[in-house]
Length: 126
Figure (cartoon, rainbow, N blue to C red):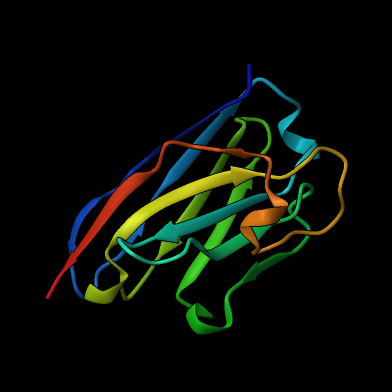
């Protein structure tokens, strides 16, 4: 059974940082690209960071470039997104997701992901 469990969300003041984690089980973690997404109330889900299966390249959204990063430890089946210089408008549920197995590269589109975690809330206060 495929399972993704996020942790590390919570409250932080504007300008602060949060390091999240997403633990995966139920499949060959090292063969899938992973993504990190967020969804605010009334808005569509958007990608903020993604990482290839072999962790040989990373990507983040243009709008968050340099502030959101993502790394992975394939030995621990875990991916670690880190968000810096957070802004109040970034209050949202944050989700990790796993792509289909054996696909190269990465994606920031929710449509390219097969499995999702339950999400973790991030609240940024001004």
